[in-house]
Structure formats: structure tokens, C-alpha cells
Image 1: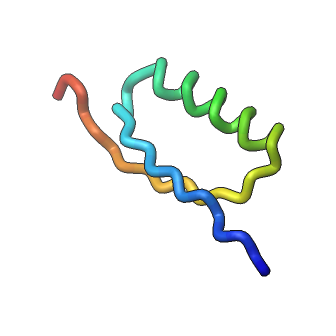
Image 2: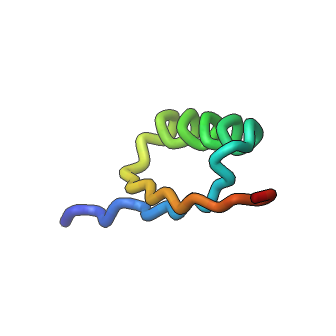
Image 3: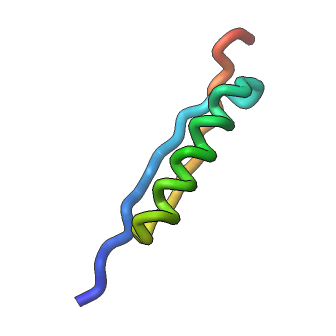
Amino acid sequence: MTETPLRIDIISDVMCPWCIIGYRQLQTALEATGTGHEIHWHPFELNP
């Protein structure tokens, strides 16, 4: 039986440096656990 990959929706401000830091931490955690995943990006402007 195959596992369904974990779907991760990321709603992120495209200009926010903290969003990139958070994404890198998520990426590291996913690699460490070997979890199958799909990342779906949704842009959001916090301060247009």
C-alpha cells in the first residue's frame, strides 16, 4: 500500500525574508524525516 504524500500549503509574503527562513527549516525537517510531501505555494502580499 502506498502512502499518500503530505500536502503542505504555504501562504507566504513573497518579499518576507522570515518566510524563506521558515521554509528552509521546513525543508530540513522534511529531509530528516524522509516524509513524502507536496508543497503548494500561495503568494500573499503582507504590505502591498
